[in-house]
Image (cartoon, rainbow, N blue to C red; front, side):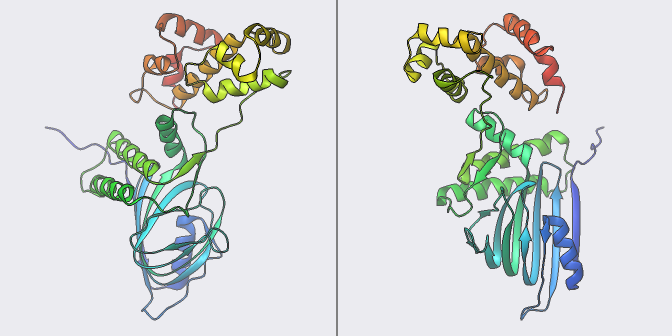
Length: 322
């Protein structure tokens, strides 16, 4: 006989016909400020429901009235669409109409103003770290902030794929069966992948760390290594890129940073491995798989060199979930 485990989902529900209660609830739910609900020709009323966990939630709301204000959505990534009513997002900047049939990503890098009326609205809310980790896996980069072009209209076929994936997610997240952490995590990952494939975005890659003393072509070479560490570049490729001979590049590196170009490139790839391991947990990936991805084929030598560089084994990094 088996018993259901604990359900990781949390459910938040609210409804009523009081303007002040509506203002307080929606300001709390979406980080709004200066929220000004007003009555329209409809009898005023609101309903809000959110189901999910810290990584992903599915929100639905009905608001028979006008709501305007400013939202700071920088703590999460949001996708929204309406089935009735509408309005505008990012007023006086990159203004976008929110209308039935068009999903829109909220601006995620700064606060924005909105004005909506008589809406039936759905929102998918992603934890920033979850979506950025998924983007890093898709693009083969380090996790970093994402900027979505909320004014760009997704392609019809991408919207169809997004809607299909979202229907499957809703069946899982909104279903009556208790969800384990693993089932919820898989639903969040699949939805995040669909979101990233649907909505145009760029990654704000962190600035490449350059050792003190590096300048001129050596600095250019190090920046080139950071940008292309996931490709099979060699010292020869780097030298050609910055217009030096291999010997000239080697001499410049020894003089300015005290190591060879090859050692620098190898160190950058070790750092990328460590980042990957820190952003995953046991069961999501393996040390061997990440090491091979970054060009380290010999497991024993890799583990020894990793431990010497970071003071812990790669398996210890993976187990220490951040």
